[in-house]
Image 1: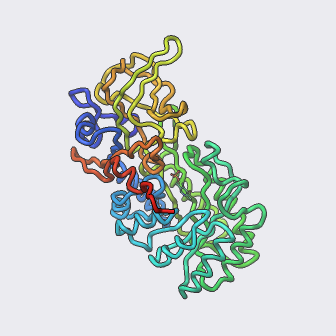
Image 2: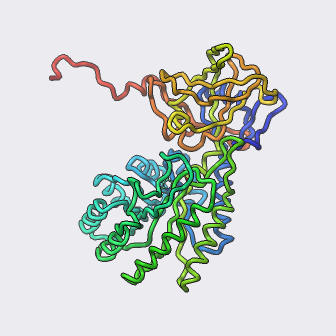
Amino acid sequence: MSLHQMKINDRGHLEIGDCDTVELARQYGTPLYVYDEMKIRQNARRFLLAFQQSGCSFQVAYASKAFSCIAMAELAEEENLSLDVVSGGELYTALKAGFPAERIHFHGNNKSEKELRMALDAEIGCFVVDNFFELELLHDLAREYQREVKILLRLTPGIEAHTHKYITTGQDDSKFGFNVKNNHALIAIKESLNKPYFHLSGVHFHIGSQIFDVHGFVQAIRMIRKHLDHVHEETGYEVEVLNVGGGFGIQYTEEDHPASIENYIQTITSEVKSEWEKRGLKFPEIWVEPGRSLVGNAAITLYRVGAIKDIPGIRKYVSVDGGMTDNIRPALYQAKYHAVLANRAGESPHEEVAIAGKCCESGDILVRNIHLPKVNSGDLLALFSTGAYGYSMASNYNRLPRPAVVFVKNGKSRIVIKRETYEDLIQNDRRKQVFAY
Ligand SMILES: *Cc1c(COP(=O)(O)O)cnc(C)c1O
């Protein structure tokens, strides 16, 4: 839920998808991720409409790492999205959801032979090849399968998007992709063109995540086009597909001012059109890979407030029943979040507090400074914009069971991932056996 669309009912409770959050917490327990299904659908439709209006051919591939589960893959299928996966597990989830294999793209800098075979068996639509090792391995497998495989090559354009260093990926010193500057990209393109079991559909780049400024995309497109000119001179090759990655930013707090979905797509499509037109080339199909911008602002996390510790003159800690186990982003990259008291959402701020998680780490702080009404134990806290990289990065640290996830729509709710039980936590543990070794 984005900050300015907060709905409060006449009981003073926060609502999402026309559901009362206090009721949701009562019904499903806390912590609880709640996704507004229509918000995800609207985000998807905004991407598709913006592309349709540009007149370009396109694919919008949901980067499933942002939030992967059967229900999400079903929704992506219904909204005519393609799907990016980066592991056997994400691929398995998509296939189990009945997602059409030809719309699945496989990413990652270290796909194992087993994962590649799984994807070949499923006959997925495209492999985004990341390095020379994979180029050889995948081609050997394609020969074994006696099948032409569609690939994109992931290039590293040497662009640094202005975002946190752990989430920039387009710079030269990166574990991802073939570098443009040192000629690895050209060599990889030549090798791909010479391999009989590959069909090189085009190139891919991804310059980072939580990017607010459209200019990074413009720069990267120009840089890649220049390189493609060089490739064209050397080989005569032209791309059919240009995949510009994801990374479109969303609003977490009032300090965040990302461009709109329409603005990103309009900028990207015009830049591609103008660069290609200058050269008299046929426009490529443009692919984007939004993760965060499809699901991030569609969800909130509900927590129950427990212990409150006031250190006079220093800080007041309000502890909740989740934390870094369901949202690692504040601990991992100082991510900022906005929160409200969901059961008293209409009340004015009264005090500044820190919202602490319950894990045994001093860094387990969800929000360092936030103004809330006077907080009491038992209050319900809603953290906003937790739909991306929340559940998908969740862990069982301190043996906390992972929360449930519900989808809400038109006043109705449904479980899409059930809460883990203590039994789930020990299901793979084995007791000592006297004669085991
Ligand atoms: C992570 C990633 C994405 C999605 O990034 P968001 O910031 O969630 O939009 C897209 N493409 C690639 C290659 C990625 O690694």
